[in-house]
Length: 236
Ligand SMILES: C[S@@+](CC[C@H](N)C(=O)[O-])C[C@H]1O[C@@H](n2cnc3c(N)ncnc32)[C@H](O)[C@@H]1O
Image (cartoon, rainbow, N blue to C red):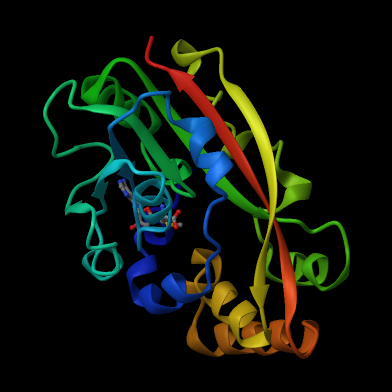
């Protein structure tokens, strides 16, 4: 985990809110136990997971360290400043903890201890990653160009597998949920501009990369193919 990248997102909070895909409702249902009431969205960012959980009728606490990201969180949720390593909630206060596109930024051991503390008995930890389907075409070209890590062809690499470092939480259930995002070239460029691997580049290099992205994507309106990689485990 590169701390500079982990905390880079606030600089592009607006682009992130605009251009990152939402999470499929069926993936959110998969990571939350039946009968859940209150859920913690950990590393909530601009609230993509939060809004999806709220739309399922759940009560959501959104914990996010970055003020600019947290400012976008849905007003129906309870937004709190905090980290995965120091969750500002009492013991046994939520039915599920969900982290979207965020678990890899946390200190695994400290985050697991905090998740175990705030979960009620029978609660679940759900981890989600929206990965770009890079099976071909412009998506493959862009993924290669940026050195994207969250892409379908790398979905089984160890770094995003929660099984690594989370042995006590086994067995993990896992399901892949393909979905689409309606887009145009500007949206794809904004999406790529919201990637930590791009944000931390020097300005000149960043602009050159984004120009190359723009040149690679088709004109007009099209669908971006995503796959939501969803993991669920129960508190031991
Ligand atoms: C890629 S964004 C994901 C945001 C959101 N969950 C989503 O699915 O769109 C990663 C988020 O994790 C936050 N973050 C980084 N380190 C964190 C930590 N140690 N604890 C909690 N959040 C953290 C960042 O500020 C950022 O908003």
